[in-house]
Length: 122
Figure 1: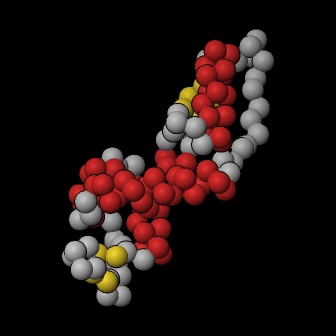
Figure 2: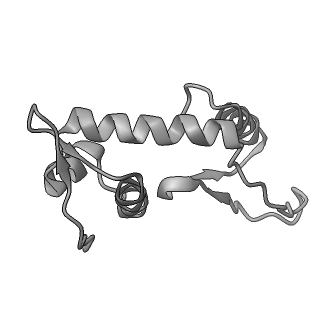
């Protein structure tokens, strides 16, 4: 993690550091690329986990309103020519899933609908 800031961060009367939105966004971008668990990332960053978790939650809620799910076109071979290949779907934040048959495709479609709708499945 090589996030650096040249600005002085404000501290409130209770000793809490106020982090500007731009810095929080940069931190959250780095977190999404890292693939690290939130608890580990927050500890490494030196931010209390509840604070970091609230940043992540706020970002998720703001993205739900922006409909940030992107769709891509995929070609699927006919069963006669397929040789047990799987479709790999890359999700934001680095998660991925492999879909190898009709049943898995149904589950994947449900998951993607939930993600697009901002459901609890994410």
